[in-house]
Image (cartoon, rainbow, N blue to C red; front, side, top):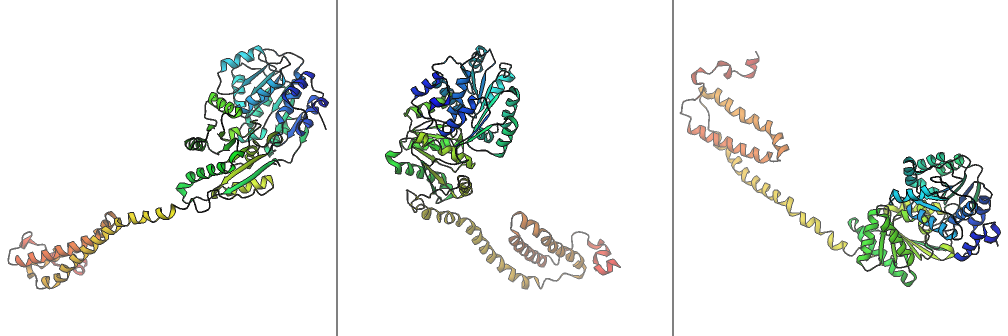
Length: 515
């Protein structure tokens, strides 16, 4: 079995490793350290939690033990996708350089530029940075990368997911062509492979496990959950999460709970606190000091549950995480590998449980296709019928409450129809005897034709506006009846209007007018 003493590391580095309690290297460490010490480019592919960080920190420290850095010109560069991972890499350098006089600087967001500028101005051997903050310092003229001899890209596939690939390509062009490059990733997407072909020179490929595999020491399970009602899905899902935690009992010493959205991280964290669980959130929108405080509490054991977005899925090294709960199925299948890799580290046993709602079933299929295994299904700890209990009492109430509203106008319309129909039947015998005198015929014909044409023209408009066309027509019939009664009372009266001066064409028929 290979030992660290067989890897030609600096004696002071070996002493720090022994004091840290490590005896034998992991497969990725045993495969990557020798070619890195020879100055070759290395492409390391291994599942998360296998010790990739030490695979590049140990050979870097050994090679940087001789020499001295100049102001604003770091001798090595380590790029990390998140602040937490960068801080963890910095902690590893502190552990392994305790017997060497090497300096480092950590360039991450959420920290003032002034303090970071002071460190850079003194000259550092190791510069650990996130891509965005590194470019900010470079554009401000505070950083010169022409003396970088070793460059490390850690968690390259996470860089791809976060959209850092253009920044990585730009940073590669800022560094010398003769640099040594150590490139590490858990998966190898086509875009990652394109970058390695472009910027790495004949790299030694170290692949200690099949790509996107999960640790065999991690027990996995998924709960297929369908809410009783769509608007209750979030609440019932949180109830199931608490039931799953309670079902694990004392085995669940601590856990990371992953959510896809930052908003859900805050909601789940508040819900757990409300029900007496010791939980705190961590995501990219929180202040850096708060994120650091939360992580320190989780590492020290004072915080039991860490509710996190995928900002915490990569590279966080908390050795004794007993459980990982995926509150949501990750949108990217690769994230599942990194999420559950937070448990079962350093050979320990771990457990990963996921909740899947119907709309996430396609994402679940992608995860199972990636890991090339079917994740065992779990039983609902609340029972199959528990969430559906309120459904029977609440669903019928909605239509009953709304039913009287449309019924009221229907009853009023039916009553008005009966009332209006009665005078319409009596209208015919009442108006039949009313015959105008011959000299009044032209005028009365005109008066009677006008109201007959008007309802036909107005009816569609009235129906479109208020839907009261039928009642208006019945009222017109009543008006015509009233006009007939008035005509009978005034038959002997003289015609008011044109009188004897009525034009002749009014008395002509339509055919006569055309002629």
